[in-house]
Image 1 (tube, rainbow, N blue to C red):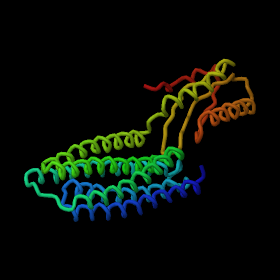
Image 2: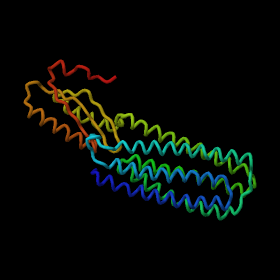
Image 3: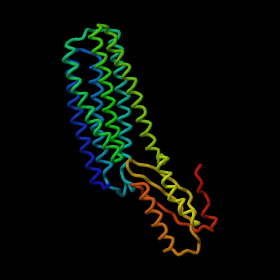
Image 4: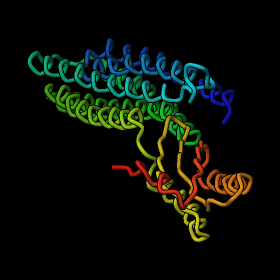
Length: 301
């Protein structure tokens, strides 16, 4: 994918920003009408959506920049920073919801105009769900952790709102006021788990985690075909940075081969690897198979 195509992904972040602003306004209105702490907590979570959407837009713009003298391997890890930031914001929002709900447990309050407030929140939820699904699909299609994280964030917001709406409806139906904050606390715990998982996944990317087992297996299948011809491969290392994938390896060939012959084989192997794993950046080091120095200090712990 070219840098221009990556920059085009920012339009999804703009969609997320606009949606977050509209949804926040609707939820704030629903809280103001009803006085429900659940709906207030839902609105507070939407503030995080606005901040996260802006962060996603910035991250996608930075990640689309081509490699330069200061960043020889590009800027794709900017997406991991954005996803970590978003995960932390999700957890913070959950804490705010819990604090607000506990206060309402201690100081219960009657709800007002529940029907109108619920109707407004339902409209906001439908909008959030539609945009969330669009972002998740775009993120998976283009292997953008930022878009996928933003979409999942919106879907956790949908889950939050659904839980809150059920709680507010039951409060209006039964008159049991503690149910409103209790539902809010339950939903907060759920989104806290989602945010924590997002932070963990993004942190793994910043730590240069190896490629998933399925992609590593595809790489090994290619190399095994050439091992059958007496070629040796070792020091095989992989990592992932945003949508980019990196592979480095040592290829050992007979010492009496010409440079041209070794180069020709390298081209064949790399072409097959590119076909097996898209967006793979390969660095191949050619060594003579009969030289003991080729086997020194290469084993991974």
